[in-house]
Length: 541
Image (cartoon, rainbow, N blue to C red; front, side, top):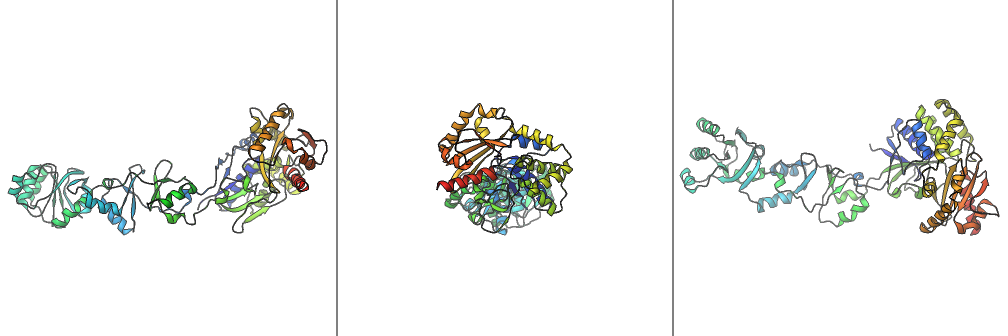
């Protein structure tokens, strides 16, 4: 069973990251395998939280697009380079395969062969020369070992159909000869004395002990086969290694991490019917055909702390959304079938997840309790935000008993870590908690920056305003608002796209508007700013 992927929005905050981790932990405990991910680097605040409770930071998920590894491609067993063409043919025939992958000793793809390659090798290649293993010849001719001195046999094939005297006069045989012969013992003796590479005795004839002793003395390889001479001569070349006939160039190969959208056109237009799949380190994995592109398996995902396409992972339209757990307004996420959609008007997604632990009767261990507690504290500003509900307060009270810490001191330390702007560029500050909304068919960007020292922003006020104006124009936003929230005084300083002063007046219901204006008791993007923006746009329309 594949793991479901759980992640929050593109600008990971503490509630988003902690809810992905705590929900994943819950899902795994109720036998719904999952892995938490983040969509970007975490904030200093979240880093503080994860370090405090000794929880590993989730890996970054770049997108959820369909990849080759999501397809149910054929796991065709590969062949080794030193296996025989004969064995490959029977394996392909028995398993109804037209294409067979060939790998080296490290499991890396070396090439492929097809039934056509085998047929053409019998027509076009030199059937006289043979280089293969002793074992391959035994396997091909259903032979039995009489004498073995070499594991690798290399030489020119000669069918000894002439008399021994004729062979001597013609000088047909030499030390590089592979001799196919029946019960012509004089010929066998001559071949042994000459020191040929291998003698294949056909018809299952017994070899006199005197000849066996002579062959042993001269270190001559001997094989006996039940087949008659004609069949043996016709088929012995099939004992050659598959790498002698395999294709190594002109192959269309894909890696398991390739995206289907990038490969689909090439596959559909290719003259090939099978396409090898390899891993990052070039290990062979399987074979892909066009049929596998029909109804591909999609990544199964669970969204937390968001339900808008623009805030979710790239390629979300290609994923199968199983579940959404959120506390924001209903967005534009669409699914082809009904799903579990839990959207509750509370201050934090972690409050909902806390309730889910209780509903499933799952014990909350200290690290998970600490993460849930941190997510609620962060999103409700230690229960001071207007988004705070009784459910948040109950969750904080019960989780605090598990974690056993000084709640106010911990919250202040967490906020201090998160609001530090040290070494951050103005662009990093703006984007650290930036969300894009489509409100009344207009793209609105709202950044929220929490601080314990507004002067860190004010000294660069003009730079922030210029950045907001430039992004608005470059990214085709209707407007951008940056709310710098003073956690202690419970209010926000507002910066905005310069030519939107008129709508800012409507949003905050004030006449005297200027950059950096302080709005008392404005601390919630979700419950205060977003609804006010919607109402203001409606008034303008």
